[in-house]
Image 1 (tube, helix red, strand yellow):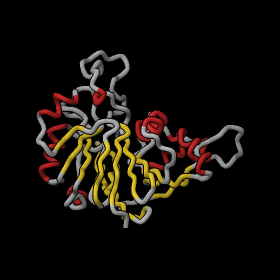
Image 2 (tube, protein in one colour; image 1 turned 45 degrees about the vertical axis):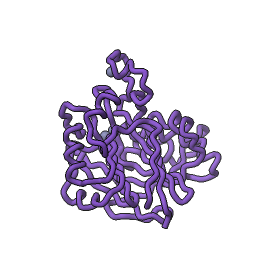
Image 3 (cartoon, rainbow, N blue to C red; image 1 turned 120 degrees about the vertical axis):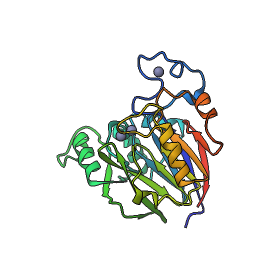
Image 4 (cartoon, rainbow, N blue to C red; image 1 turned 30 degrees about the vertical axis):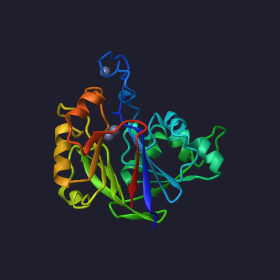
Length: 259
Ligand SMILES: [Zn+2]
Ligand SMILES: [Zn+2]
Ligand SMILES: [Zn+2]
């Protein structure tokens, strides 16, 4: 069993990213680098393996910025555009690693991935290059990934379902508006918990700052980080109002978690 997990936040922003196209608000115009948020994704590193959660439309920029030279597995939370559209950019990794990359996600997620990236799964030979991933369907059952038990955490994202993932003492729960009771029992004794916290105003498919602060109270992780953040939340000012064990995630944040 690996001893520690390194988590790197590749993107802490909501679906449109921050700054947002055409917006001149204080957060979008901010010079604080923590207000610069690419689309939501994290890299989990353990046992000399790199496990990527989601392939955002910013994946290329994220991989270059974090010096990611290899990806051993991709875990998909769900198939919204801000979580899958960078899949094509794994092509250089396929080339360097000389292999197809294993991906894990639900049947529903992979139905959409196969439809949107049809050229990648078309059995007909093509003159163009395509990303190569092996789709491994997962359910809510825990599974082994490079010697660590990964626990999928079912979450409600409006009417839809997404998966969070628990790796040892850390859990990453992006896109959700509600954490079902059965899932809460899988989130006890956490050292680090990432939670969706889009903004203050209610949203049909996302948790708000107040809702996620409530989740922290209930689940009592040692440390919590909020992610999938929109431009309503300037980093410094928002975080100043949080209890000391709750922080806003930011791009480039790295955490070391004992397993
Ligand atoms: Zn999202
Ligand atoms: Zn803005
Ligand atoms: Zn979503």
